[in-house]
Image 1 (cartoon, rainbow, N blue to C red):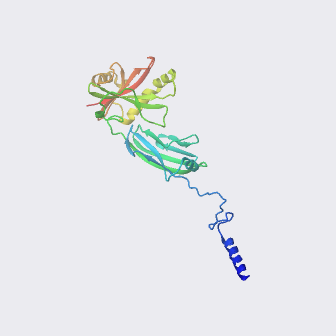
Image 2: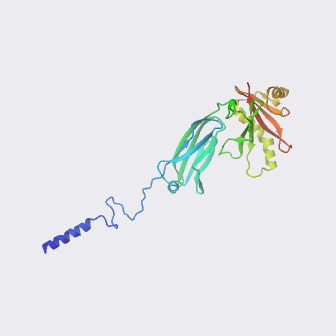
Image 3: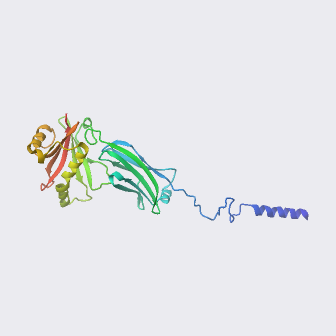
Length: 285
């Protein structure tokens, strides 16, 4: 009888001390029926294909996580991800409810130091910030080109990748004639769909010359000659010095640098009803 009672006591003690009962908290004090709230947000960083570049270089920016993850975990971590460059007053939504951008390109049309900043938000609070500084120089002969690299003419216009400014673009076309290189430069208005004549006319009459003038002056300094001040002198210089360009067009401004000479020309619009403007650059030696 004593042996039977001893066996029953041991069985009861073993059952009471077991941690296998799913209805009881574990030894750490965690209730197995309570959801796991230990998820740590995925920390996202930003990389650039180069931190030192020239104007017109196409830089690639890419996101990377601090650990292996899936899209669901990223969306669980953040409500929104944005990329901004304060010096350009530009902002791009990287992650939004209807889409996600893992990698994107951008080129800078002016030299300077740019802070490219990735920010993440959750419940209207910023919980992530990562910054890469890129230094943009203007060291080539003209914009993104060296004269020795222009060895053939180019059909069509090619522009920079500016994801912030969807209204304007700087487009160029390489020219190579009579063993002489040149570069045509256009400050164009961007428009989705068919560009209405009145919109184009208003831009070309009121903005195009000034925007082209200000952009070239910002890169290469004040023009050496202007049509308003130098009249016949600028016309003679254009016709006698420049190898490229239609000599019947009106030169508005001329610049000279250590490597190039540049002229801003006035031409007729596509319907011949108003003036438009573009620039031609060529080696000065």
